[in-house]
Amino acid sequence: MSGAHLGIQVGQLARRSVLRTMRQPAQIVPALVFPLFLLAVNSNGLAQATNLPGFPTSSYLTFALAVPFMQGALFSVMNTGTDLARDIETGFLNRLALTPLRGAALFSGLLAGSVALGLVQAATYLTVGLIAGAELVTGVAGALAIVVLAVSITVAFGTIGLFAALRTGSGEAVQGLFPMFFVFLFISAMALPLELIQTDWFRKVATVNPVTYLLEAFRSLLYEGWELDKLALGFGIAGAILIVGMVAANGALKTRLVRT
Amino acid sequence: MASDGQRGEGIEVEALVREFKNGPRAVDGIDLRVEAGEIYGFLGPNGAGKSTTVLMLTTLLPPTAGTARVAGYDIVREGPLVRASIGAALQEAALDPLLSGREHMRLQTALHGLDKRARRERGDELLERVGLSQAADRKVGGYSGGMKRRLDLALALVHRPRILFLDEPTTGLDIQSRTALWEEVGRLASEEGVTVFLTTQYLEEADALAGRVGIIDRGRLVAEGAPAELKAEIGRPTVEAVPRERADRGRVAGVLERFGPAANCAPEAAAARLEAGEAQLAEVVRALDAEEIAIERLQLHAPSLDDVFLAKTGRSLEGAT
Image 1 (cartoon, helix red, strand yellow):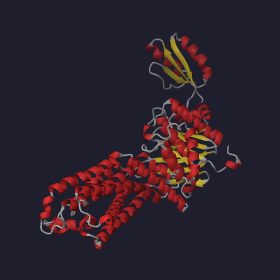
Image 2 (cartoon, each protein chain N blue to C red):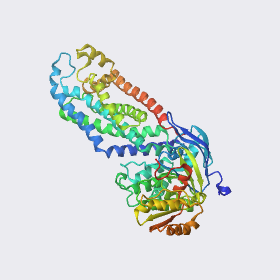
Image 3 (tube, rainbow over the protein chains, first blue to last red):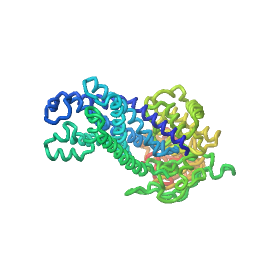
Image 4 (cartoon, rainbow over the protein chains, first blue to last red):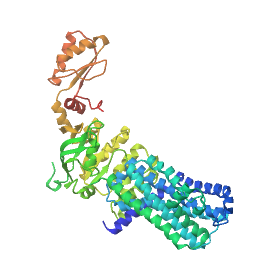
């Protein structure tokens, strides 16, 4: 197969993925509204936390604005995985398997929907946050970096959805992952900076939880400035999740698609 | 028979087996041969092994043992070449309810490597052929069962396959949609020389479409041949009599037993398979008359594929599960 043909396959599957995403308001609306709703509740309810000695910013809204990007990525796991699981359940994957389709094209195409949703989510969260009064000390370049980081994390988490779908072949099983991922979010530095968490076990868990460092990468852009080590760590973790997710999904695809 | 030019373009299956983990042999040593340009009906009840056979022949499931060549290519060693030569509409039309018919066509033609212009032309041509031009831009979620099946068939044809696998293509369709699909399949074989491997649990479908039929039961091929040959092999028609008085049913059965073994029939009737064929019908009438039994209805049934299935397996295909 030529590279051009692979490009066409990726393009057409990406088109399908984006169309599917955009034609399912039930996928888009909760992924946009739910994180913003939590942002509104938390930034009001926990505003006094900024009075704690050592709190890094005077705006809890700015501090909390990192969280919707992570929640949006979690929705991506569910959406990408559920779409693929539905393809398995309906036999659509078998239809694709009868064409000269490459696994790489299948994954890239499916993740294109995540990219589209990730872009919409990131732009919406950032715009709403800034309108509500959040800081952004790194300016327009920082806003772009936030969107790129958000999309990277969305795609990385999306590969976990692909893996789960291919492993289980069940949309319900993929949706069952959602609460588990939310637990990861809650046991991170989501509500407080790492150094201000007083409970010993919680701080230890949050310290080893990669989600903490993804949040810190967003926060550095929002209120600290260009902290390259934090950005590198954030992008590095997203990259690592992407690689692990892709390897796992590829292995699961080989088991699922046993075409000769 | 295949012409020289067509040789090797059919399907050859030898001792094909598929065993699932902790399960029975879904396919248990099947041998069959389908000639190029032929419509082959693969008939059997649910769970007989029809779909498993199709999955193996379309390279989507590796066999546990045995060999098969499709379009001249080995299904295990030459999977990509097999796939390039075949089209398949598998059980349950696998379509995306959120895409339109035209969008399905665009995706399928692109995945098969058609160039941009050919994609549009081939897509329009096939949508027209299956009568979906008007509905091409509607989402498939709103299509009827028959429309989905027609689109499924059109999608299987985008790359002009030499062999077409149809797995229970008309299950759940009304008679009008079923007939339309039969016409299209018949046309593909007769006008375009496409070899068709069709699984079905409908006797009339196999009878109407297939040049030859293979009957599968519990993973084994129990009979194979032209429908007419298979029926002739069974050879014996059934006579069914309904007495005017229900109380006479036992007496009618007693008379019919003189002419052959009892056969399945409606509860108010008695039936027997005529050992010496339809020539015995006059004798049956005379015997009933001699017993002074008033008969409301007397029918002679020609043997059906169900009779063939019954003769080979001891069970009725229509009642088998």
